[in-house]
Length: 130
Length: 289
Image 1 (spheres, rainbow over the protein chains, first blue to last red):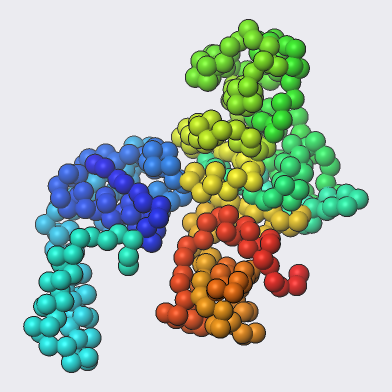
Image 2 (image 1 turned 60 degrees about the horizontal axis):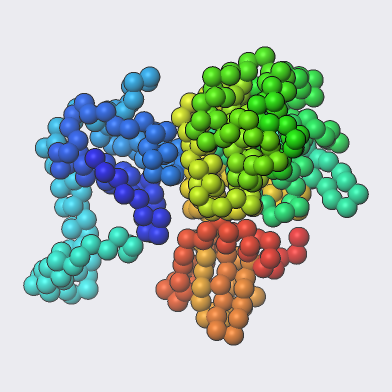
């Protein structure tokens, strides 16, 4: 697993870590039971504070992606990938529902909306922008 | 989280300067940075911790013990690195080490040898023949070789080149891989803290401006840039410091929500660096204090 941190991005560093670990799990690079680097080791490797990595791990644990065993470290949790994907898809659905509601309020037609979505989908990712 | 150091309302009065009711704590297992400009009170604060000067008011507890009553015991558990070389210049590293080692019950010769090797330090050279960076590394090697739980460094990076500075910061991260160890260091080079520090205490003019986690500091402040005509007596209020030029203003605020309500999309918002926070708080501060 690789984690690349941008100090100039608007996305807070702990969010960057969270997102990248989640993506590694969803892509199957990290599997159930895999050991993650310790909070302190990761902070050292990324040149960031322990508190930042701890915050990322705490959040991931709350969201069910990882589990921490005292004295042993943090592991990828037993939730299966399908379930996690399902969860993320539901999240996308919710966001889309918001977009649809907003579009209707502004009289944006479905073809117009699809066109906007298409443009955004094909645009290269831009990390600095939120 | 456990406190290793607690300063409670500590004051120290000098003829032309005072440390005024300083309170903050240092958490076990983290890197804690003390920032402020030269003369802000960083070194005085560290001297108070090290029991080298006596506070006029307030109390200091280290490892849960009063630092005046248990000074000797506490010292055994601290590794201290001074800003300037304070060793006998004419001694070799080896001879100076013997003097230092004799002060500590827990001296670990093996650990010392390991650091000597790691830093490429020549044991038989005289101290006066070391470069500034080498002297600092030697000082750190000595501080780390008696199983200290708390490492206190006064300006360890000042005057050093970027490569050595980076090595020293790396070493701090290395030290706290053991979660029972704590590093407290002072610096006026804010970029040292931007990366590895967990907690930051900002001293200005003998006062504590803030003592927070680095993440809290970064989230608390926003740097706003906009056209000068946006400013009026009311919209100036949320700023801690403002710099105005004929082509616009730049200001630091600790109320990002309010400034966004005031300026909306008419201004640019950026995450300030620690340096921005320090400079705006000190130099462009427009509030009477």
